[in-house]
Length: 215
Image 1: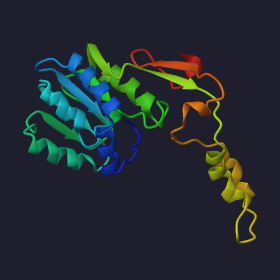
Image 2: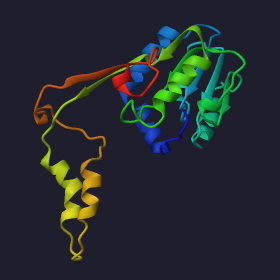
Image 3: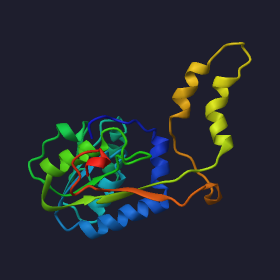
């Protein structure tokens, strides 16, 4: 990870209670972890995956997180008796050096989209420098889909402040910046105007560039 993205501790709590997300990671860790293995947790946040790796038998865990949330991870590790196996690095993974390459690298840097900030360059760097031959990346791949949706209320919330206001000010110059932006929203399937099309598969074992046209 080469550029920090700050989340609140509350946000990390919401991630922990996201059952589909957590179950997928837990199943992957259960398959990948073996007794005594070395694990690298990139974007560790408050440390949930580092703790789970220890529970599953990892012998050495490196938890990497540039944000101050790593202090919560330290406290949680102490409460659960894992401080002898987890080394905490308040840094970014591209600046990290470890004495023994990791058998398993687990990361959760995607944010809303796998193309977020420096996610892909960070994974490429970790794979090439920090992963042992034959080691495992979690996740291994992401599939991107795209579709047109119909959501007038959502669009209006972007556009309305720049078209009309109570102060007799012309704010139109701001409109183009928000109508071309994106954010995470929850929509109903009835709002899809077309069947989602597969845009790309990001294979973290082979990807070299965040430009999907070059894969």
